[in-house]
Structure formats: structure tokens, C-alpha cells
Amino acid sequence: METTIVEEQICPYCGHSLDVHSTVEGKPEAGDISICFYCGEIIIFSEHLSLLKCNVNELNLDSDVLGEILRIQKKIKNKIANENNN
Image (cartoon, rainbow, N blue to C red; front, side):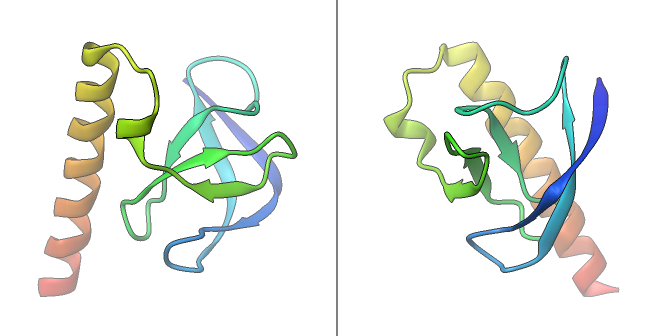
């Protein structure tokens, strides 16, 4: 896992500023999927590497990959919910 500092982007769901992204390898590229750590929503990098809302059901993802993305999203949303309850 590589962590990369990128030009500041705004989450299209919650409006938080994001400037660090982790990838399996290399820097984020157009079409890469990410998850906002502030709201837990799935976002995708555009061709200009801005962040866009993403409906993963519209992507042609392998079921194992989709399952992993949704599992990670659930963990992030649970962490956010636990932090908000404390």
C-alpha cells in the first residue's frame, strides 16, 4: 500500500478536503476508486483526477472486488458512527 500526497480535492459528498490517497501501487489514476474517510462514500477519480460521486453498481467490477470495496466502506462508516457516538 502506497500513500501519496496529491493536489487538494473536495469530497463531492461531504465537502471535506482530501489531499492524501492510498493505493495498492503507484499514484491515483483516472478511474481509480477511493473511499472518503470523513463520510465513507465511494468516490472515483476523473480523467483530470478530480473526485466524482460514484455508483459502484454502474461499474463493471468483479464481484470479489466489489465485495471488498463494500466491506471497506462498511468498516469506515462503522468507525465514523462509533466516533460520532462518543
